[in-house]
Image (cartoon, rainbow, N blue to C red; front, side):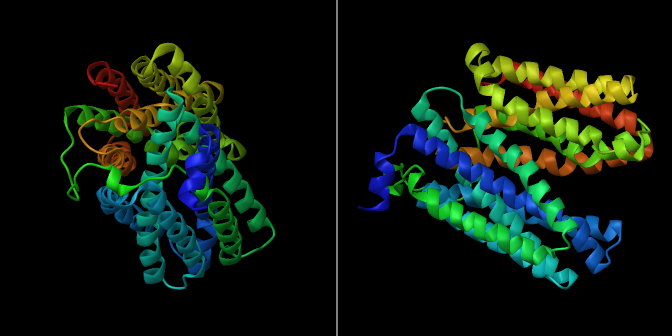
Length: 385
């Protein structure tokens, strides 16, 4: 019996478990890399400034892959494209561990970024298809698996570092886990035949007004997320003036509530509707950030960052879910269009925060991020969700 036939006989629950596993695998790859950045920096003798410039190679690889991924998914299907992305993503992870010179690391990071979005858009397209089978919102739970993988990957990386195992051998172990997961689950992904699609689409299609609105929501939300990922520790060190052992507490609190929020967002969406949940999420993000800005003591800042985690948890999954239901272009291309707009926010947010903080203060820059939360709520009010 062919793979497509086996997949065609799978139940919606089987498809859901397979797609959830792929979200976990994707998150595990990225978290494994992130957990060993300090080791690689020390081994190559990079300064912080040099490391920052080298890390820009990853988004340089990510950005052009977004429209290309949508085109590949439309032409060859999300399952085939996802398999190619997963294999390339995990193999490139190993190459990052073996890189011996800056130019090698930069080259590998460009490919790593390209492969990450190849897998990301493919698996989100799969998630849209599974959600359609269920007839209700389940997208946020998939993104919750990615967050859960982040904790798992960080824990494995910490253990590997503690045992003195070099990144290249750590990454080989992750490669084995990823390839095993791909082999065990690929036949349970949703099948796809490119002949089922409409006429061939060009590589890039301008999004309509609805997709532009969804992209604007993602743009504002990912500015908030990017700032929290990159500036939480700095904020707790310089503004909250937390003790050394508590500097990372804000980031941890944010990540924990983001993961919890994603696992509960689907239930909340079924009760309130996607638009209302996105509006509330934007307001919660703004309120949490303003709490941390106006009351920068350790307990209140922690509470504020926890609220931001809950606020940002469901916005991107719900936006992706809505984009996947586009009637003007295939799901993969619609997701790629919205992701491209949103990714620009993730890319420019952290450096803009740094520039504003340098010209004024970090508290003022975080107030700007709070305003982005309000923009999420405002745009969601007018956009079709």
